[in-house]
Amino acid sequence: MTVDVLKANELKKAAPVFGQLSFDDHEQVVFCNDKDTGLKAIIGIHNTVLGPALGGTRMWNYNSEWDALNDVLRLSRGMTFKSAVTGLNLGGGKAVIIGDAKTQKTPELMRKFGEFVHSLSGKYITAEDVGMETADMDTVREVTPYVTGISEDKGGAGNPSPVTAYGVYMGMKAAAKFRFGNDDLQGRSVLVEGIGHVGESLVAYLAKEGAKIFISDINEAKLQQVKEIYNAEIFSGDVYAANVDIYSPCALGATINDNTIERLRAVIIAGAANNQLADDTRHGIVLREKGIVYAPDFLINAGGIINVYAELEGYGRKEIMEKTENIYNTTLEILNSAEANDISTHEAALKVAQQRIADRKNKK
Image 1 (cartoon, rainbow, N blue to C red):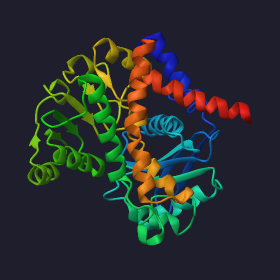
Image 2 (image 1 turned 180 degrees about the vertical axis):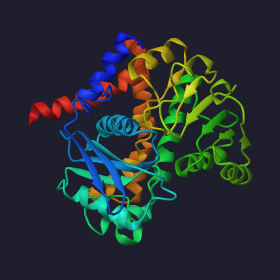
Image 3 (image 1 turned 90 degrees about the horizontal axis):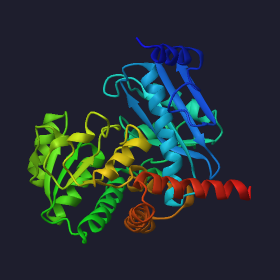
């Protein structure tokens, strides 16, 4: 073990939060524990300059608590920039619950989690994410008003996944316009990695336009189901080396990393997963050097937060879809700005988000 690794490990022991590479001046990190329900959760509040921190709750069986902490820090930071670049008056937050959503999630656990959310008095507002359903948000709502994405019959905007997928679809079309000169996806080959709620909805949009769709997922039954419904082709090889026009990561993040980036053959990356770049700065530059058009994830997957934001602002389905459709225009602006300034598309999007936050901070 090298001296640098030893020093890094010692730093983690001495500073379990501040020593994390993903810590980016977060305002608050809350560790939640309840012995009776088995709840172990972490809430990350990155920035509240633009408004209360809104972000979903993810339940995942992490390999370690370090992995869970790193995930919530990266995700909450991403939510800050997602809201800022989309023009929403929201800050960035996220929560993770450590455990298997299929076997360990109970109404009691969700209510207890809701009590922790409530204790923050609205500084953090939760919503649905991986491992969660709309019904879980309804349960959280029983103990706190600081939750969005509840059922429509309870006054909410409902499942945000289809709206998230629509935003990704808009961003993908914008990337195609930038790369190919037109946004027609008919006949374009697209590999969708991760066929969850968002991934399947994205496949539906692509199928309607006539794209040639390849799908990949660890759930074989789901793959067969989606294949039959949308006439998609199951891809079983190396997804990163697939000879397709567009790679669309819609599962977990960091799939664009040192191990995969050199194998990529797609000329566009446009997907719903958060934090797709393992190293935001370095990998964004490498993609630019390779001539791969990267549609920044925190921009094009913002449809979900636009959907749940409607519950706070009181606007309806028509305005939700109009705001989400505008992701197309914003994406084109970001891609053109990156090219004009000879910077990565991630950096171009980040600059827009950071400037909006800085402007609001100065006004305050």
